[in-house]
Length: 391
Image (cartoon, rainbow, N blue to C red; front, side, top):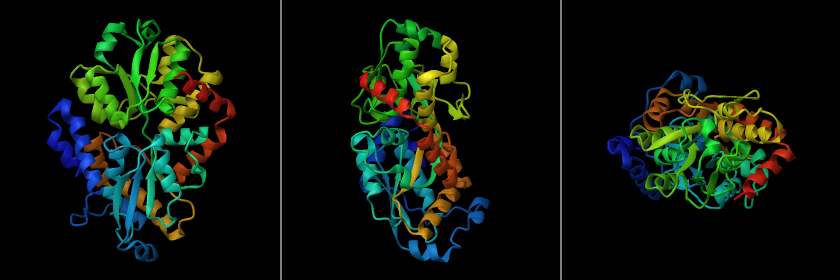
């Protein structure tokens, strides 16, 4: 269904994202993922290696059941679109082929949805998908984020990273030709976000402090879709979102000369930051440091790097409540891996979102989360809090 929606509206650049968001809202009201059981994909090597429906215990457990995949944000955003695409394929790779439906539970910067997942019946029928802001808010102990993410099951993750973008009108008015020009902009860039406590405005504020760039984080937008429309209308000068959402939603405006990519977060790798797949030619945060001559060290760098770790390695985790039965956990772990490594998923993800999200399996994602918990210090959290307080 998601592919067909995009195909219908792809010819109208300015309406592409707004139209897709509207259709997804209708899908959300109607109940989520399309039933594709009548049009099964041919088996592939990953599914066969995974075992598919060869687990009789799991097949009996999930047969005839419905799994709800909760999205703690509004319909139409990058996390929501990824969830809906995953749901279509996940239900084909869990023994018993349960229906997987998507439900949006918004509020509290994702807190309401995540608490509903954490407090859900531990039976494997309730899943949640995170955004990068979720682990960051949880680690900070943000209001409402009372769940224990470290004890939840992580069945896999997408390792997308983020992209900041600005309007061409602002870029020209501010005289920005290179990253080194950012500190000299004559007026502050109005950057739109859901709220000031998210990972992207926090990262923006730290980077702006570091280079002395005039940038203002304006909170109050329901999601990245609303912020994008704000930039398109001139209400905002820019915003930030995942790379996959950038490629799908912002790139048409870039191709028309109305918006410009500013900087990508990049991927955190062994203390370094490297370009993300699909946007290798776009400058990273590391390039920004080098452009303004600031060494990659100290408290600010530690806070930036930890944030990039979250943005890249834990961009979107698929989680469930602690304590689900072993057969359910095994089936969900293996089902996620089989779904996201299938040729059918990869092709549709690239067609619809321009990237497959660089998924990782349950073991890798769980390890990344535990590593984050162990390495984020009180000093890093304090610097994040200072960045929130700026707005």
